[in-house]
Length: 585
Image (cartoon, rainbow, N blue to C red; front, side, top):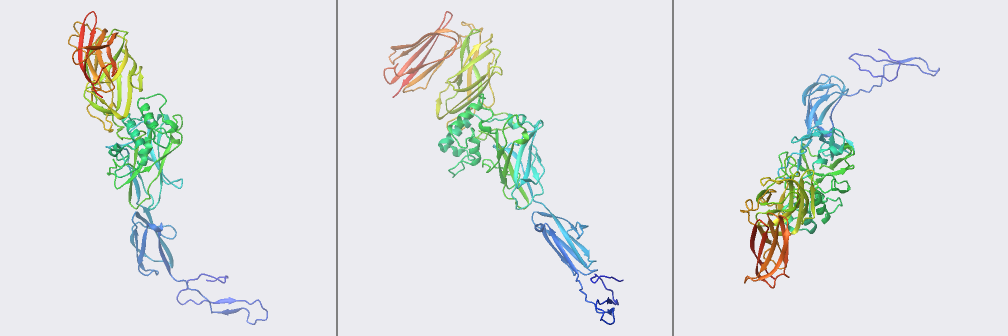
């Protein structure tokens, strides 16, 4: 062995003699070159180290003395939220996938690395915020929902498909991080206008508009909606304040309630919402387990929408983002909740038709002729104080043409589809007596109609609520059969003249409602308690159908009890009915 370099690395063996030969550059030096057996040597000690990657992944240790030929016990213990993966040497070569193993030290210097992977994960489910927490989104062949994690605007996960009723999962993720969660609905044609959420807004009725109107005046009845106003709180939850903001003004006003009324009946120009407001709003909540139910507590992590809510824009350009709570070690459960904009009473069930506890029965006959215009009454069969009415009706558009809905400002009629949608609400409520009409439908008879034909049917979503914003169950309505072939002397002989006074008693004014089966001359006369005629308030030839005439205190002398008499007669039949009026001060 020899070398011409002054510095060399050399591992001596027992008995080796090392000699250094040097030549002086000075000519005066005798004995040139000179040899010496004195060598300056630095003996490198044995080194050995073990490290964790990443450092927070776990703790590593060894037992034994690291000298060549010695067997060491190498150990790695993962920290909470991490799992051990494997050991490698200083060159990256695989050593072992056992956390603890025996290692024979064979070199003077070496380093082993224990690799760990995070076992922390984020999981959750997407649901509609209602009593059942209905799985959301619905299975749809045209579109699908996706979720993706971001950190500092950079993606840290691939997009994850959110399937109906199946938890989504991001794994692994890092403990102590704060991520942004993005969700969006991707359609097959990448058009927002074909997405499920763009086409399936629903669940909003006049009752929701009533609740929103209560929110504008801080009505105490809102405590029955803890997701809006939690017990002991004075402020509305952020999420349901957002749900109530139908006109996208960042505040809650009577205009929001009015807009919801118009959209609930399908009024033109109300879909989509103003200012690019999306049909659904999203919020999330960190929970203890996938089985945990949040309702009736409102979720508190709001998702913000990005992009333009335009049917002609790409579906991938419109998404929602929220910053989720800091990730803890282990399993983190974060549920995402959807609510249709305006559904403040949280009753929409996207997977099922709206419940309809209202029944429609038929009694009595109206006998118009083909081509005549008639007024068809819809009467409530039990007395009730109502704060909101939502009526969705299907009618036979081959037999009648619906012209108007009397005494309502907010309604739509679709003659082609044969539908009527009506919405009404009043914070003060209105008392309806048994058999009092709640609606009058003005229609033209287009063809001959037999008396067993149900011209109208109630559609799902029809709803009555009191002025405490509670849905009234099992409300029933009644209306009349229409029979263009009815014979006065036979078909009508068992049909009494339907009539009523609402309100009664009254102090200022009241209305007599009555229905005549066929065209007739109608007289209404008022009498005092002694049977003396006071006034004839109606003497007019009238079409078959429902009618009403208002009476005020000008017609009557003073407070007390009065009587009225209705006479309807034509060449074939005469019909009479009597009733009582009570005027108070």
